[in-house]
Length: 200
Image (cartoon, rainbow, N blue to C red):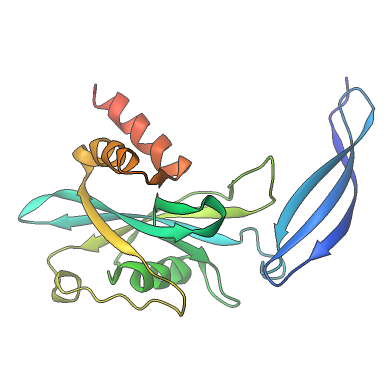
């Protein structure tokens, strides 16, 4: 049995940020099939990803390690979501530059070292070709600029920032769900895995 393969793509409609496409492909049984998908119009030439996601590890001498979540209104969900800080990579930016910029814009926090970087990963592979890399950034929670963090949001952006002890993140996500917020699947998956590893 042969592998499935892409045959062609046709743009059905294009807007400022998103294109709708119809894909023709051949499945493993050799049958030609059609699929509908969305793609971003903003991916820079030859870039492997559209954006970055940020797992911020906030360290302080006075408290346990924390991470950062942002709460914002997402029109497609018709509600508020709990997500990691994230954003698109601008032309000419490295992934590190994009991640540090987005973290500062959305949370006011200034990051130091990059502790890890994922390969390009799919965001919603059944519907979209959108890809991102997830960077783990170390944040000095005792630095004056982070103690008094000031967000630098773009026009139309509004975020509520939560710094949560790593050991209490699953509890926090469940509480937000009970309040009616929608948790991003990447966030839920990570802390489900961590909670299992902690024996909880």
